[in-house]
Image (cartoon, rainbow, N blue to C red; front, side, top):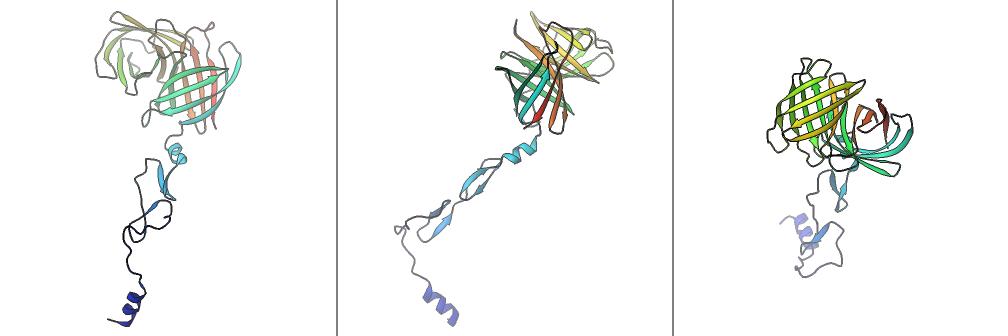
Length: 265
């Protein structure tokens, strides 16, 4: 044996039995009978193994979707009164839909939102029975929409035909598919008063109410499946660090829009 290896062998301590545990191994390591061995684990998404434990990486999550987070808000009601508050936005699935909770003057409002480009369409209510439809006006009297309600993160789809380029008219529900894949049909009455678009769907024996705001070819509609409930619509324009919105409520006294600006905290 070469002298170097002979000296190394002579210096190496004899192996210890598995029963000879040290007083303590560093955090994230365990005794294998000879030495402390680091024990890596599979950490959840958006975290990493550091210092012997999983460490959350909130910044990574936020970077994936700039809409998600906590926002401060200022707004003006349709009657001209101002208000302030806050909002929390969470993604129910990658790319949406989004769940929104506003807190204004001690009242909590819930909302669900669908994104199309830089437009965020939101349906909201003070109850649990609400939804949103994100329509595109094709210019030929048809509206093609994706919709969500407050009970599911899966989308429904709807195509309305027979209307006018101004959007007013009586439409046929040419194609209707619920989030669970069931088909439906019916009609939809759409009336336009200034910036407000009022929709009444007649599906079987049921009638559903909706309130919409148009920007370009996007019609954002908030709807309610309840017989009587406060609900409405918000249409936000997405910009860096802000959401600039226009909104309306079904029961409001004046035919005007409110405004609201959210600023990322």
